[in-house]
Amino acid sequence: MTRNVVVTKVERCADEVIAGLGQAGVATVHEAIGKRGLLESSIAPIQQGSAIAGSAVTVLSAPGDNMMVHAAVEQVESGDILVVATTSPSTDGMVGELIAVSLTKRGCRGLILGAGVRDVAALRAMGFPVWSQAVHAQGTEKRTPGSVNVPIVIGGVAVRPGDVVVADDDGVVVVEREQAGGVLTAALARIEKEAVTRARLAAGELGLDLYGLRERLANEGVEWVDGPDSGE
Image (tube, rainbow, N blue to C red; front, side):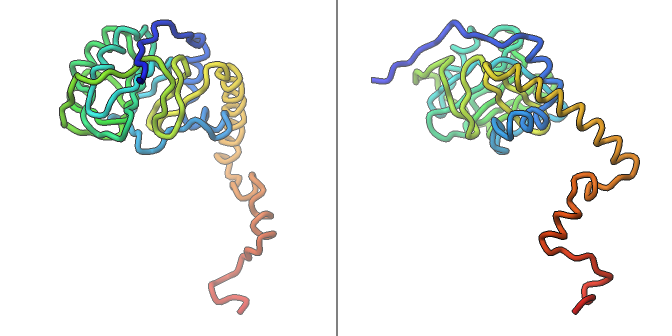
C-alpha cells in the first residue's frame, strides 16, 4: 500500500542566496548550473513580467484532484513557492483564484503547476504568479490522498522540498538546495563576464570575432564568397 504523507519540516536555503539567484534570473542560473535544472517549455507563465525565487514546497496529487494542494497550503512559509505534480498526466484546472488567495495569505511567492490552472484573469489581477502546464477550466475532485513535501518530478526535472526554484518569463529552473551557494557564485561570475561582452558588442565588435567563430567556421569548410554562384 502506498504511504501518503504530509512532511512538516523542510530545510530551506538562506534568504540571501535565494534572492541572489532570483536577481540572476532563469537563463543565467541555468547556464551557471551547467545547463541543468530547466523545466520543459510546456511549463509556461500565464503572465508576463513576473520574476520570483523561493524554496519549494512540493505536492504530489492524483490527476484531477486538488485535495493535497489544500493540504499543502498549511505547510507554506513566507517566501516559499508551491510546486505541484500529478501521478499521471493531467491538464485539469487544479488551482484557481480561491486557493491563490489562501496561498497569498501564507506569503507564497507563486505556483509551479504540472497540470492546469483556471481563473487566469483573476490571478493576473491579484498579481499571483503562475507557471503551468495548461490553462483549463475543468474542475477537480477532493477525494484522493497524495503527499506533501516529498520528491517529485515536474517538467522532466526532479524537485525536492527545500530546493530553490527560480521562475521568470524564460521559464522555470530548479537548483538543489545543497548546491545553491555555489551556483550563485557561478551566476555572479557569469553576470560580470556578460557585462564585459555586452560592452564590446555595443562598441561594434562582432560575435563572430568575439567568440572565435570565424575561424571555427572556416575550419568547418565555410567560405565567404561574393555571391551564391562564386567559386563554381
